Each structure stands twice: as C-alpha cells, then as structure tokens.
Length: 337
Image (tube, rainbow, N blue to C red):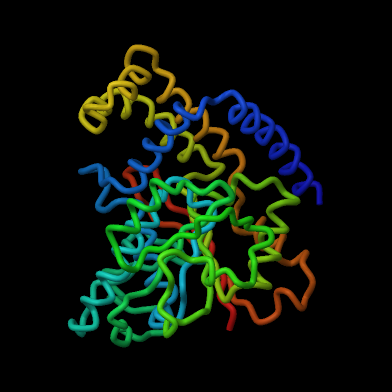
C-alpha cells in the first residue's frame, strides 16, 4: 500500500504539471506539438529504428491476438489528431490480406521482445502466434474496422485520415472513455458494415498515462464491462533509459524539423527562432515518464475491481525495442476468454 500511495503522490504532482501545461498552452502551439508526436509515432528513423513505433504496435497486436484479431472491431480512445491509428490499421489489414495468400507470414516480435519476463527470440521460434497457429484465416474483403474517438474530436484530421482508407472510421461526437455508450457503433461515420463483428477491442495509444488514478480505475472498469479486449501502449516508462530517449527528442527536432516541416513557417519559427515546440515535447515526455504505470501497477488496479468485473479475462504484458539503444514500446493487453 505504501508503494501505491507513493505512486499516487508522484502522479498528483505530475498531473498538476500536466494540467498547468495544458491551461497555458495555446491551441496553435498544441497543434505543432501533436504534429511532432505523430511524426515520432509514424516515421522510421533509420538506422536507429527497424520500423516505426506504430508499425511495431500493429505487429504486436497481430502476435498477441493471433487469428482472433479478425473477431474484433478496434476502437481507439483518446485518438487526438489520429496519431498512430491510421498506420496501425493499414499495417494490420495489409499484413493480414497478404498472409491470407502467403502460408508463411512474417509476423511476430523483434528479437528483443520480452513477454511476462520471458525472452522470446523470433529467430529461434519462427513466425508463430500466441496459440501456435502460423497463419490467420482469410481476411474479409472489407478489412478489420478501426474507429477513432476522443472527448474532444479532431474532425478535420479524422476526416482526412478516414478518406484514405475504407476501414478507418470515426465518431464525430465526444466519447468519454469512463462511460462509453453501449450504442457506440451506431455513432460511427462512415457507417460500419452490418456484417462486421461487433466485439469491441479498445486501444489506448500513448494515452492511458494521462488519466489520474481514480479516473484510470473508472476507465479500466468501463473497459472490462463494455469490451471484449483492450491494449495499452506507451512509448515511455519510469526508467533511466526512457528519460534518456526523451531528452534526445529535443536535439532530434532541432536537427530535422527544417526537413520534416518545410513549408510550415510557423512550426519552424517556434522550433528554431523561439524553441518552444522542442521544449514542450521534451517537458511533456519527461512528465509522461513519471506518470506511466508499470504492468504490476495496472494489475493491482484490476485486482481492486469487483471479481465479477474481471472474471474471465486474461492479461499479458511485455516490451519491445522501437529505437536503438534504449527506446521501448511497453504494452499491456487484456482479452475476455
């Protein structure tokens, strides 16, 4: 209990920093910061990354869920400006369509992946899913649907993203992750195919650490009661390695923004003339490191819920490297069996 209280004290302090940060941050600057976060999610920085973090998340979902991935409709909560979800949808559906034609798909974790403390070496075990099946059944022609939601919908960004894929949808009205309505699918735009599976799998990508402790418990409670599965993905953790990775984001933005954001003169001004954008990205990243929960802390929160709410659920967690030498994706997945 002492450790839990200590975490909550740290969480309250970091929450206060985040709240002050949000109140002082003009929407224009916030948009530029979100553009940087989307860049870090979706772009591959060679030679330090073998793939983008968003693609790595998609492959993690495929490996953990196996063929059952076809049974879900994925609902991304706290989607922001669409972040990694568009890339995750594209990678998942493209890979599954390809694997339905190829009997030996290249799915699985990188060589450095750790699951529940056990190292899994893909070079030794081969491309197998969690249940040992090598390939999923054929993907429906419509693809697996992904839905963007947020308490503050970013409609222009969502419309643009959904226009580029028939399998990416959004809900234009505000959605609260603590009390998502049972009629969620009826609010989707463009409308879902009636033949698509209504089982909900929730995604929290770089989002769950924003919830203070009482709100996080409510989100988990609603998730376990109203969905068939969920996944929490974070690009940071309360570790020295993660702090070091975040500190390197500032110099990286200073070196590369002229190329990545050329033509957006406002972005370049607030990066080079007045370096507000890289400063906020680093500050927000450090606070996020303090707020990110470990798997054992998430399990403790789940165990505090009523037995009936968590009965029949199976949980897995692990991490896999997204950036050499010390950047890691930390993931926590729950599935109703």
